Image (cartoon, rainbow, N blue to C red; front, side, top):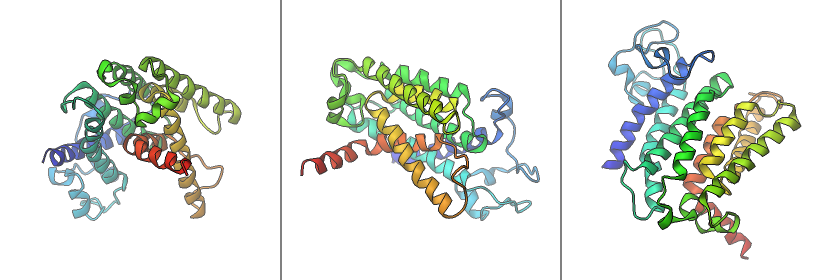
Length: 286
């Protein structure tokens, strides 16, 4: 029952993040009266949406993906954002519960930090998709959360293993004696990788926003997890890009926002990192 309640609450948060991403002005601060206040309306006819038109998922389905007033098509990004928010609140705590001992309550710092991290990644993904830029304040929040998460674990009980989503495999690559060193090394690796990529492509492959975001991800996931986050992001991005070219939606030179892939790469490691590691090392044992 608690899982369902969290999912429903997450739908509402996802809907709110949709509003922030839609109203965001690249020339202004991320959280302003303009983005957070005022009534929601149809971008075409300016019809003020009533309460029943704002029910997550339900309104989208009942209205058949159209504005009830003018018939303007509603983007699939709206239900996608709502469902994503629901999944974050429902299942991110479950992963933290499963790897932590003793099991923390829902309102413990470590659980709330990880929930907020993924909600911010969702918001930045939608903004990057719309404007192909990453607000600095969003990246700054991730850096702060990464620093907080480093000290949110009961280190004497959990050790480095608890901060990695690769389980005991983290000991093969990480610094066993210091979680802080693991996190800082993750920052160095992530920033250095994106910095060299920017230099190699002369800014055409990646932008400074991606490098700044990698600083936050490096601090959040640490080493070796951040390497897999980036690896998953590139693999998923390559598959997506090839699909777009196959269906002639993009050319090889077309710009593709990368934050959504970093967010999906982060979620892939967070939810499936240990099963993937078990599968990979199982192959090596043959």
